[in-house]
Image (cartoon, rainbow, N blue to C red; front, side, top):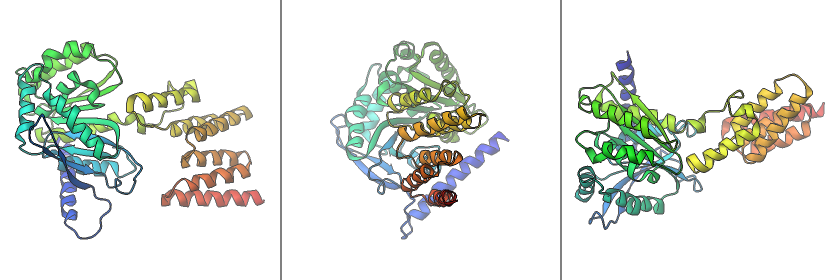
Length: 397
């Protein structure tokens, strides 16, 4: 049953990629499609410039003030499945995958291959990391609107290099996905270096997903995978939010797809998951919620993560209690949500509803109009227009 489920997932993604290629040949203007272009990266370390493939989200050309997450994958063939998965998982309002600029490596570049070979075979060789940190990532940031949050994605050998990067330059990326990593035979000296480097890791939070399965192709790596898992559990500091996942019973070539989907959901869960009113944080009050989202914005992600939905959830729970004091407390939290995010249409709509509940229709109308002013989405404009008309009618009574 599990095998069949994952087969259906893989088939659906393959169909999405096929559809992408089919529609890309159409002469019609299909604004929902990603744009694929080449980025030539001059390099002293590679000797010869390298042409990376950049896949831009459909909104990139339309939202000129928006900045984006970057995902880098060194496998040339990863572009198709990553762009297809990303298109599907981000088109519904950045959920669950925030819109991302996907960068994939050129096929057969000898200079890049040499740097990877040296990283794998020579302990302490960091020329590949120098190339990424000094040449590749600055080239991406200089040309594209990036927000500073970066993901390094890898499968098998490239997954081993993701772990090598995490250990030697943890601040280079915010998140590391390592699907079925090659670790045996002193691969990039990851297992030898891991205990000391994990124990000494400092700085801002980093995320790691390391996964594998029991397929025939991965069995030769299971012993080293288990060893690495034990090292991580014994030595990782609180800086590293790590998750170890086994996709046993699934196919080898499905692993990067499963790992990417699973990793994306875990990585951005704090953004999408609304805090329940009785959660440890929310039970301490609205200020604790704001402090939590400041941590997410300033430390974990480095870009603004709004507290709006969690504040609204707490306000709703307060106003559901009996008594005039509960209503006042709920209204105060709604006001705080608007103060924290004055351009949030959902915050203004929630506050408008709270004012209407206590019969303050002037304020309800004011904030429903502000909700309407702060969105162009047809669903919300229709909803807010109907609410505004209802408030105006009640005011006239």
